[in-house]
Image (tube, rainbow, N blue to C red; front, side, top):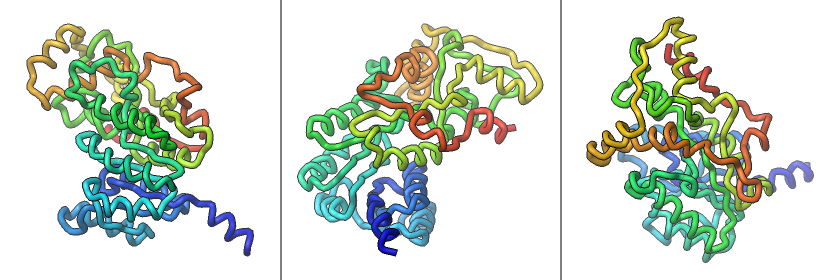
Length: 314
């Protein structure tokens, strides 16, 4: 019995910030499923019915809900004191709101691992900084701050979520995948990566205590999830058992559309340009001094492949 208790004591206590978001909710569930004492910092408990349902679910499942926000230093101090690991999963618009949290983590000195809210492609690798309205530079600024403060961290670079772009097969303006015509951006051979939020959460919880991921980027590039647009439409055609008409939009034309479309309406095209024309998710090899690949570290973790996901769209 004593031995079991000692093992139980080793489970890191985890604070999730942004637990009512799509990813944050999956992170909280994955933390609970791995038997970690789990806390969620919550701004309010009753505003949005969907949020309140999620909080009720997490509370019933064993999550300790703490009232507070990224703007309230006292609530951050009280919450961070309770835990070993802090995972922030707020939206990209709130990226710079993590500055106060970083200061609190630094001053308290009790956090063994901080996972900031990046969860996209690596902002240090992007080649669209002149187009993205500081989307990536804000995330990069937080990582630089964390590194400068010598806070122990892991960054999760999961590229695209499957809930974004994939329901339309990367066709802006469509809500369902096309069945007649398919628009290919660029030459269609540049590869992007998609991950399901629940799978990102599983890899994140596996990585947060792993010495191999300390002060490194965990890249998620599962073999079954790396596809070019040409490969994606070919896979879709094989499931539909029909050939779609292809319309090719060259790089120059896409750039022209991006510049002519007002912000933020042009951001979907910016992300497509970044991933499927510039290759920002896959143009580089993972440098072992600063990065590791998730499926190599955790071969036991199952994940939804693109083929699995497309089956749900038929």
